[in-house]
Length: 220
Image (cartoon, rainbow, N blue to C red; front, side, top):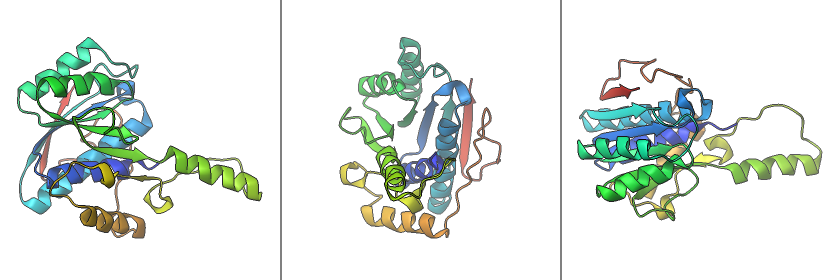
């Protein structure tokens, strides 16, 4: 398992620091997938903290609509196009093939996307940054334990401290949030100086609300 809330936080923080004020989150699994919930909940926290630092308020449209099966669909593309048409600037595409519908909507509206799991900048020019989950790192660490005889059955949760979540700053299109900013924040997460809530917040992104500097529009 992974601490998706950490890279979700970094993505939300980075785009708000870069000047985005109207955000969107479109998640897979219908609000019951723990990983997607952690991504979304971390995203809200990061956006809120960046907005607080800048002394501004930001808006987030947050939805699991049309994402239960993690599939691309015309309905999802229409939903996200509507968001962009009414002012949303960037959407976190958190649901596998849902990415295709969201990037199509972004392309049609000269808008932007946050990728998920891997560096998706190579798949669409609309991708500004991606929230990375280090599946390769997880496989490497598990296999290493198998080879050296230290592996034991059970659940292992990997995060920033294990070099298993983060942002691909080498392909980032962010302008104000720099690699140095990222390195400093990542170091704070690793050290524990920056604690990010890992509650999944299934079905209710406002479970820890009210938020101080974000308004979450929860769309069924």
